[in-house]
Each structure stands twice: as structure tokens, then as C-alpha cells.
Image (tube, rainbow, N blue to C red):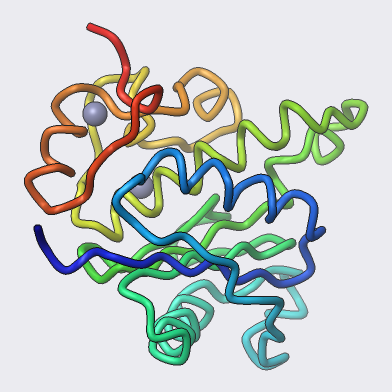
Amino acid sequence: MGRWRSLAVAWYMEPHSSVAWLTERLGEAFPGLDVTPYGEVRLPVQFFDVTRGQWISNQVLGYAVLLRERAEADALLLVVGGDGYTPGLNFVFGHAVLGGGVGVVYTERLRPEFYGQPPDEELYLLRLLKEALHELGHGFGLEHCPDPRCVMSFSNSIIEVDRKEAGYCRRCAARLEALGVEVGAGYVLPG
Ligand SMILES: [Zn+2]
Ligand SMILES: [Zn+2]
């Protein structure tokens, strides 16, 4: 199979408990990959836009590319406890290098508290998993999917994140397998 054998998970300002949970789920989702925690990282302060209170995602993504090299992993996911944006967008839930094995997820807007709702760890973790599967899907080479249930559908709001499922539609799963990434049972949507 292809070049995807290892996935490292790095994090910044994110509780270790949620990263540990996510790392386990990613190991189930991608059984052909060796999924390991890389560790907590620091982000250069100049990547933070103080006036917007958000990370400049192009820079953070570039940093994640460096981290992947340092980790000597085929793929790397960076979980950022904060908010990020790209030019022309108010915010992004995540960002990836298409086919480049690198993804970033921003968690601030995945927390119910951001929307004035009470904390809900279970809901938060499910959203985190969906966004991680989405950005890693891009990282492995998948583009957006028109099926609104599929985790590769585009999400512009938390309602859309909640609407999709934590799994790939059959078409996206088949594409991933063709790209050399095995998808675990339970992460392929029925039908
Ligand atoms: Zn996307
Ligand atoms: Zn799909």
C-alpha cells in the first residue's frame, strides 16, 4: 500500500484528556496507521493576530508541516485550543494541505460554551473527532463531499458539523482505500 504508515498527533493549549481520546479514535478509524501522540507544542506568538484574537491559519499550517518533518511521520494532525482564520473567511474549523498529510483543527468553536450553551464534553469530543477526520481526509487527498452526512462535507457552521456523522460515505472511504489509507469498521457510513 501507499506511503501512509504513521500519524502523529500534536497539540497546543488543548487538554491532554481530549487529545488522548482523539488519538485512540484515530487509531480505530485508520487501523493501517501507527497513530501516536507527538506531544504538546508551542506556537510562535507572531502567528497570532492580536486584533482578531485568532491564529493566522496559513502560518499555523506551515508550522504543522515542519512538525510533521520533526515527528518523522507520514501524517500529522495539530489540535489547537483556539480559533483560526484564513484570508476571506471569518474563521475556519480546520485547515489542511491537500494530499500533504498535514491537518490543523481549531477547537474553540467546537465547544458548546462558545455558543452560550452549557459544557458538554461528549458533544465536544464528537465534534473534535469529526473535524479531525475531515482535515485528515483532506491531508490524505480527499476533497469535499456532496453527501451532507459524510464527514468530508463542508461545514461553515456548527449546525453543519453536528449534522454530519463521524464517518466517511462509501465513496470517500473507497477513495481513501485507493489512496492507501484503510478505513476502520465503524467509520464507514452505511448505505
Ligand atoms: Zn474541508
Ligand atoms: Zn463522502
